[in-house]
Image (tube, rainbow, N blue to C red; front, side, top):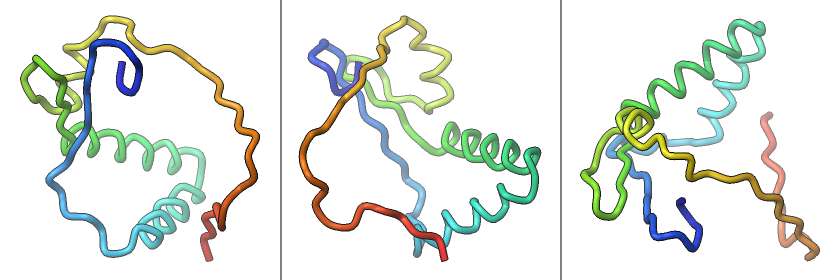
Length: 99
């Protein structure tokens, strides 16, 4: 599993250009999603489809493939749920605000 002590090592990367303003992109997605429940589902589905098309899945010892192919290929149950509880004080501003 990614990020665990297991033998699997994986990462994601994309060759798509980075958006000029991430906050503007998020704002546009939020505004479109607020139009209706159906719009929210359509925005989410479009985002997942684009991520599946653009992202590459890389695992040590396996060929590089699209995220969509990886979801079809790597089907062994390697994920687990965990809860992480922090106790430290927040450092700096951590809220994302959409004007």
